[in-house]
Length: 407
Length: 221
Image (cartoon, rainbow over all chains, first blue to last red; front, side, top):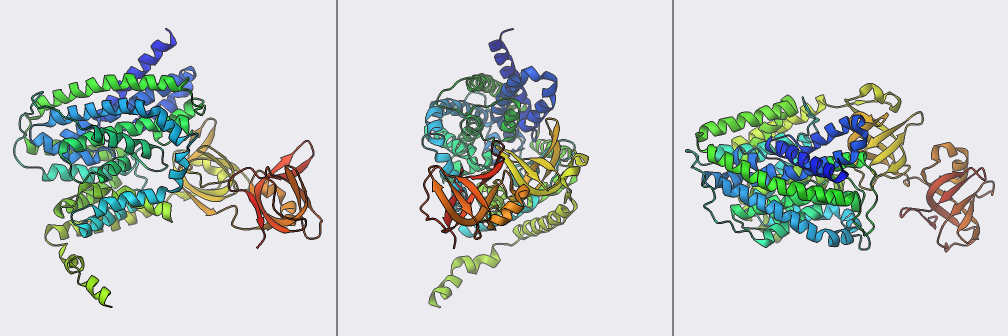
């Protein structure tokens, strides 16, 4: 079997693995990356293909994770802000439309990332070295994001209050090493509590309407995908900052947006972040995510010198393969779920969703994860009661980062 | 006083006690009680502080270690506590440098054939350039500083293209310092040199090399 066939096979397998991790809330491609690292000594000659598998899974994950966020309200860090608008669309019978919007936005985001690849490499690496400037001013960038979020809120005092409360929660909760049966971070229960459960508990009561399949026209705004790609690109280069901050940054600049726009922005951001995390690995030789760390350990990386050569080109091919497969899979699975979701009564769906989320939290984070989840729910509900924009709860990540950078 | 008065009567301050009422108060109290509980729970999870020679006993567990940075290669930091070295895997944002004294919190795991601490937190306890040491002290404790950044004071002895010599006040010790740029100091002027200390086996001698943005020569204040 020739090498290129293996690239295609491993990229396809990675896309399928990303589908599985995306559909199961709490399971992350970082877990898969760790597993591949563990297996590597037994397949030493396959290091490059393992790395392609991981990249493909990481991209595919960003397409599929919208499905559990939309239908059962179980968020990950990068889809947390999409839970409420996506769930609202489900309650209007537009759950399938939400999935299609997300899939198209993620796919267009990949196209935009390829178009911006060269300018981005030149800006962040040699000759402009914008990365160094951003790294030095990281604290101020984060402070600006936080201030924009708070000051553009309808009620500044309420927003500040929720931001600080979420932030204190983050400072305490994220220090607890809450891995239980499977290695995991306390972020999942925190975000499921802040964003997922409140969306389920406060959604309009009544049966889930039949989901319309293919009847709604879909219009995407170029600027939604564009702002997502730019935010993802910027944030992927910065140390200690996750895709969640990228989504927060993208949302911070848009005051009023329809549910469709929010989903489009966040999906584009989410996918672009993983794309540019890979680019950062080659341009800056910096691993900015768990999957990038695994790749860094698997293969020898040569710093980008203006030419896209092996193995960088193979990774880009893996991304294209993964994006195409993931696009169709996301739409197909989304359609399947949408067709059947209305057969379940809403109270039953809420119960099933909460049971799934609680089971996942217990599996990944144990009893301390349940406590973190409970506190998150209280803050998330308080945020809704006070009619504060949900993205303010991202103080859970932003305040600890601000403290880290300023102190 | 007028300004303070007007701020105190601002609607936000007048409304503050009222932002928490009904269900809001219940959620707030639940959140606060939960955060306090989490704070106490975090004490239960305090990892054990261990010496570097014993980290292999803690594979898969969380530990706290400390030591001086001996090497920084991408995300891999090598630290030493004087008896033993260990690897720390950390997304280094450029703050950790050779010679810094650091504390790391993380999980012990395998790294190739060795063990490493996959850190979730690395604190710099003391920066390498916080304290200035004298040239005699460096000469007498060279093993502590080899392959590390040093911050050493002395007097310019002689200058050449690409390097100069630093000496102490009694001219008992002398060390060569490689520097690509010419330095604006005169002979016998007192200076502080920030540089990397290395050993040259071909001449069996130690030397300093100015090779990083944080390095340089400045007037002793």
